Each structure stands twice: as structure tokens, then as C-alpha cells.
View 1 (cartoon, rainbow, N blue to C red):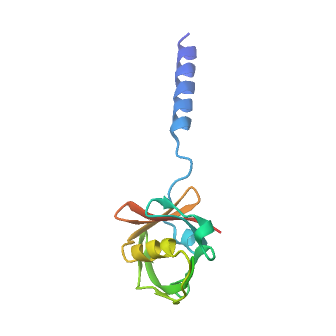
View 2 (view 1 turned 180 degrees about the horizontal axis):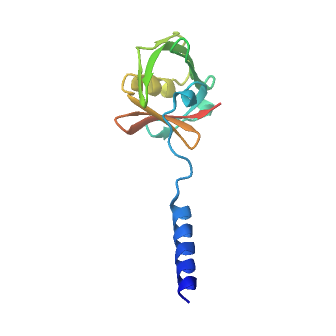
View 3 (view 1 turned 90 degrees about the vertical axis):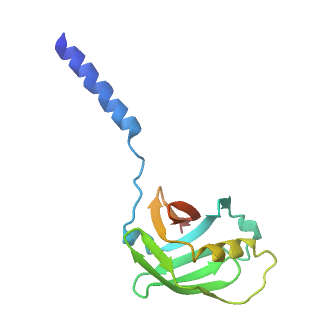
Amino acid sequence: MNMKKYLAFFTALAFAAACNAPKQAASSNEADLYKTWRLVEVQGQAVDTTKLQRPAEFTFDKTEQRISGSAGCNNIFGKFTVAADKLTFSPLAATKMACQDMSVESKFLSITDKVNNWKVTEGFLVLSQDGTALAKFIAK
């Protein structure tokens, strides 16, 4: 009889542990950073892609330690530094085109000097400042 109680207890314990297991751990593995990422959220607001001239997406180049891509209207480029979960950008340069709606681009460019952390979690890259999410991307 005691054996059945132990078996029932450990079975229940195993199910409880499985239910509480994280789906995918956050990663600060640098290899996860070096790809092309499409902006899906900035300053807590979803990106309305219908307002963009072209997709807001960025590529992190490991060899050159450069970021390049589009902020939705203009091309952007610059340098970045990464160490573990820390990430900083040098001042980014951009072309000077004018588009009908530049709100997403303006918001994104306004946060780049605030970013100091990054993580990849559940397939998303999250750029943050002291743990507060500033922008969210999905791998292209």
C-alpha cells in the first residue's frame, strides 16, 4: 500500500514540475543575435507595417560589429558592442529620405541610445534598458 502512495505522489510531483517548466529559456548567446531581425514592437506598441515604406529590419554583423538595415523609410547603419547580455549602439547614421509616416522610424531611432541589454526569448529579440523592454523583433 505504501508503494502505491509513493508512486502516486511522485507521479503528481512530475506532472506539477512539467506544467511549471519554462517553454523556452531566454538566451544571451551571442550566436542568437547575428541574423536579420524584423521590428514588431517599439515602446510597447505593435508596429503597423502598412504605415512603413518598407519593412523595418536589421542585420547584426558579427565580423564588423555593425548593424545595418531599414528603419521603415531610411537605411540605417552603425556599430554596436555586445558582451554577454549587454548591448550598446554607437550613434546610428541614416539616409535622409522623407516618407509619409515616419512615426515608427522616429520611435525606433529614439531608443537606440538607451538600449543596454538584449535577450532572445521564444523566438523574439528584445532590446531593453535596465530590464524594461524598448523594442521587440522576430527573426526573418
